[in-house]
Amino acid sequence: MTWNVICDSSCDMRPPMLQSSRVGLEVVPLRISIGEQEWIDDENLDIPSLLEAMRQEKSASSTACPSPAAFARAFEKADCSICFTISSNLSGTYNAAVQGRSMVLDEYPEKKICIIDTRSTAGAMVLLVRKAQALIEGAAEPDFDAICGELRTYQASLRTIFTLENYDNLIKNGRMRPLVGNLLHTLGIHVIADATPQGTIHMAGKAKGEAKTFRNIVELMRASKDCTDAEVILTHCENLAGAMRLKEQILAQLPVKDVTLFSCRGLTSFYAMKNGLILVF
Image 1 (cartoon, rainbow, N blue to C red):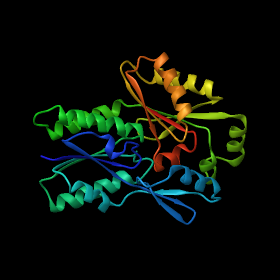
Image 2: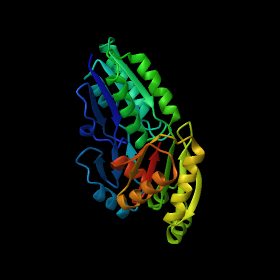
Image 3: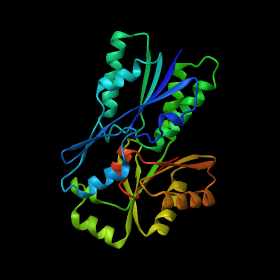
Image 4: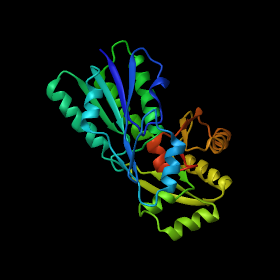
């Protein structure tokens, strides 16, 4: 039996990072439209150029999910496919994957395809990919249905927190009034938010300055769940120094197992914007 794990490009793990002779990783790219230019969120995308184009563009930017056919092509490559998508409350990607599965099963009914709505993005997919790999490689004869059940349970246990300090994209897309966004930026106020169990965004608070923001994030993590031995994925948008400082604070104050840093791909850069940080644990 051949196994593939498929993610959309809101997963910040690149395929070469999955070192396995038994499990493959394929990333299906979304598209980002800025003005009249379209960017494909693949390995060739230059993030600083994308952010600069977003900064200069006066009109709203947008994203487009992969086609069902793109997912179908990925599902055709293995006997067993496990697919993780960005929250269905943020994108149509989950529905596209479901349609892609139907297309494949019509022609290859013997294939096994599981699609899991992460109700999150970024690090949630990294943790789920790692969990899927461990479950598949840890069994002499992996049970597809049992593995999918364990992954769904694990997904429900994950928590997501993020912080923004750049609000240009929210303003241009009509999600924040210009006066509010400009005032927050001028005062150095960071928005802190988390994901609900349904995969929607909940505004958890605001903090002025990095130090207070990081303290509030650590306290929100502590209140969200028992962090003992938790694996933390911290994704940054062109903000490695800030991510390193937050990592040090988390390791010093919470009983987590480890904190792994990733840099944002295109889709997560679109949402996090420059200097944004996304944590999943």
